[in-house]
Length: 178
Image (cartoon, rainbow, N blue to C red; front, top):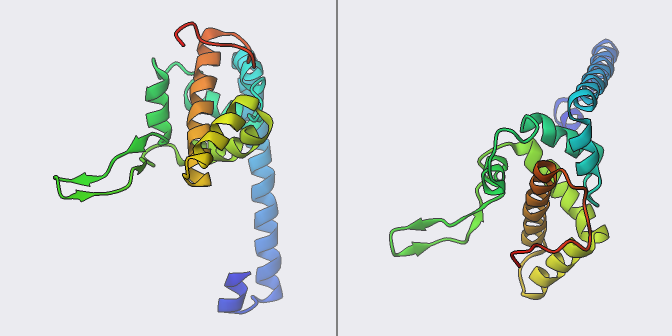
């Protein structure tokens, strides 16, 4: 631990006290997460089941998505949700002379963005469609991180569509617009 190296080892009394506090906080977090899960299962069980049907999306991410978007009622379009989470590309320019690389906006819900990024790892391995997107972007010479952000963006848009439409994930589904 970096703190112990910098500050030295605390006295045994302080150490035991900090361990007790940590144990108590972990217990509280577990209780709150359990209560949240109960509430989501009570009110939004159908959406939770639909979101968990997406390969790569876990239960925690699904319920966190439901809770933070109030059952997706805060947003009318998937693009609005992506902006809220902060995974939309943003071009940084200064007039006509200075052009920066495009990056994600990072304005929005950091915890949800981090959870989706972690889900993108899993989705790019186990979900055929996301695996194709990931490899296509990497094959173009883009970074793996950028490919994972694109997968997270796609995952979020798909989660929004599935939650709004009420249909479970279908690997073979093709949009009528495409």
